[in-house]
Amino acid sequence: MRHILGTVVVVLAAIAFAPTVQAQSQQISSADRQAIEQIDRKWIEMENKGEAKGTSSLFTKDALQISVNGLRRGATEIERQLENVQKMGVSIKMRSTDMMPVPGGLAVIEYGTYEVTYTNNPTTTNAHGNWMRLFVKDGSEWKIQAQDLTREGPPSGSK
Image (cartoon, rainbow, N blue to C red):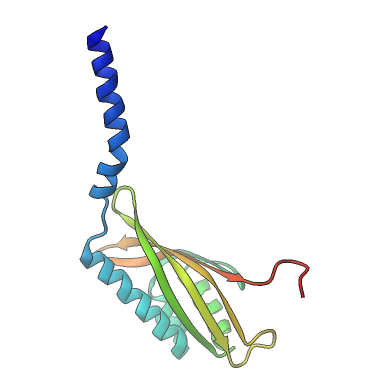
């Protein structure tokens, strides 16, 4: 009985501490963090300059993007959507809140907030919201596999 009780205690302790050990082993390296931050800076710079082709090059070929402008699949579709959005005169600012590794170390989720100003949008002059990106290794470099830009607005029915 003591042997069984001792085994149960050891198993329970292992289960209790496993998330801590896993979290410590699943840290994002400073090199990976810097590479992802560089992609963020490039994305903002190219988006604000209206360089849809350059912006889309930061995505994997089969990437997914969801935004107020719809769902796009693949770098080519994302590029076409960016061209249309950039015709509205986009100026975007993004802030990263945090990054977290996906178990296995092959992907990173990053999220934060954004503010955008439009100089030629018939429906609004500015907007803000939240964003999330899933980065994956594409060969030796990080690329955006999925991106979601969610616009915040007044609750439904409010004026």
